[in-house]
Length: 240
Image 1 (spheres, rainbow, N blue to C red):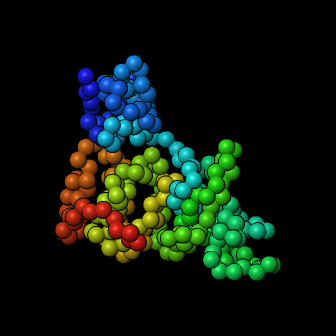
Image 2 (tube, rainbow, N blue to C red):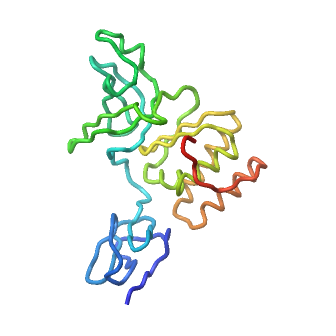
Image 3 (cartoon, helix red, strand yellow):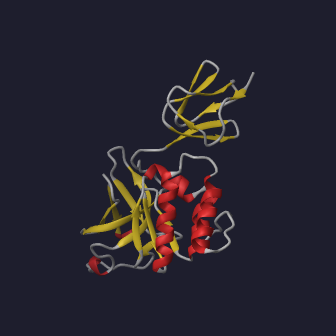
């Protein structure tokens, strides 16, 4: 008989039996033993239909192709730039992936991106030795000017973004700031000083309470109390 022993977003530890029955499919953070699906890490159980996985609550950033990350230019190379990803990894941004505009041979690349420039980019290649290439060619990829950066636990990024971007959407509604969340645990916020303070406090609260149920409603109440504005949880729209 099939049975789900824990609910979506429950905290699990290694050895917890999360479900019984061959109809359930183990994914990341779980494994099958006979007819049981068992957790193999500490984290939040994610139930997507019959697929069961565990989202870790701690851990460093593991780069994957397609991730959108925030980095800082820390070197100008002969044919591009080296970008620090604010952790153990750095990446290379090649000239052909930096812009849709033509860059002539011998151009001064430091005039396009200089040391210290902050960029939001996409990982387009990750080797087994963790050599990483990034691109700025795509929707929303650009240099970030002004604002401030906040470093968070990379494992908490999915909770900070929220399902379909609901958390980020609520922060934007309440504060009116611009916000970009990188999968590498860097968050860029830009707006009024008051809005940035509330956003930073909200992001910290999400980090602290990521393992608890009912997080969306608590963040909604927190933002309404801080700003006096009505906040409605909703999915992010394309282009926001």
